Length: 212
Image (cartoon, rainbow, N blue to C red; front, side, top):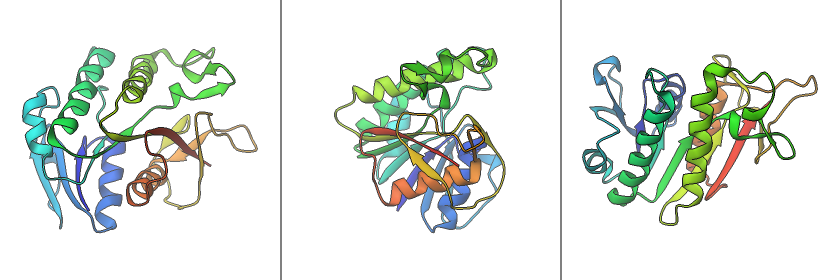
């Protein structure tokens, strides 16, 4: 499959890139610094500016799917930058005529309990508020989108480098926890779940989550 991956050098994006290439997909990596990507078979690295919707739309044309691992973590205004970017990505995907858009979401928008989002729980880390609020608002934007076949995948509360086990659970809008009350997923298994969804769509116009 010919995939456009936005944010391929980031924490989650790089794991998705590795998984996509391992599965034999043709990947166009759209990144701010393409020189950071090592050459690989079936990989094309292109410099982009996600805030330039017109330019981005041209770069997305001809792909079968777009995966957005875009984040604003390196910016002073994380929330503002992310919202500008995700709006441009949605608009560019639509303008490019790409039917499928898969988006990396956040755990903050999941329910910790009925009617209580993780982002609203006591002790939610303040440094992640901007990122979490952005992912929540992006989900609401996608829910209003009628032209695109979108999917958002939210990770568990803790996502970190680890092992690719291929063994995990999928959920809907509730935070997944194990028998010890822990909510975790390795970035490698997150990437596997994202690529599973790309290859065998099961959550059209939905958000879902992955965890152990």
